[in-house]
Length: 248
Image 1 (cartoon, rainbow, N blue to C red):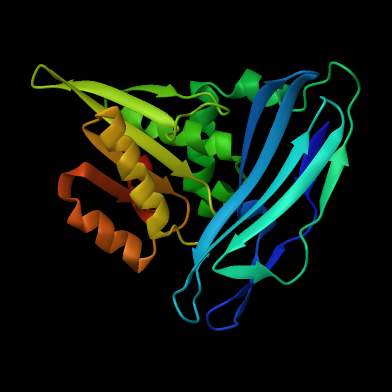
Image 2 (cartoon, one colour; image 1 turned 45 degrees about the vertical axis):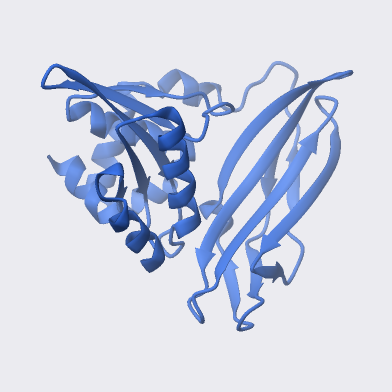
């Protein structure tokens, strides 16, 4: 059983009334599970955010679907902060034969060689980055930092603790740790300041040397200003910068 959105989100800003069409493929999917009396409850979260290009108002939207017990749709919910849904998001339920894992091939090939192949594909045509899943994008970013001399660990998708990659290396004989969060967004879906603030809090809590937020899109003006005030504690890597890193 697998859930997927069937339509783009239509969000209207509560501040200026502008309507935004949000590409469903730009949303990040996170899957988590919790133990309950009849087994695991699985939660599918489709999340995204953007700044209204009419007034700059921050919009955050999410669609949550709950599977409980496993194999049965329990309920779904939709939330939008800073705006509202013009039409309710719709999703489809895909059923597979027992024992079939639709992501099995991704796990088999999601090693270093596959990340290298994806880097070559993106360098050949930058639009190919939007054909990657969120997990493939994380593995691509991990490979980029590994080429810079870091030892990298891609965290489990369901329990990433607020960061997707932990990268470490020795600098001057001292350990240096990066917490890296990856956002595979559509090109017009800017990463807002709230995500940057959240990642800084995780960096402080984990006592990492630095946090890095990497995206396939770009950052809002407020996000850039906030990161600049943090000096060496957090870095923002937009898609143009990521391409330069891949070319090295």
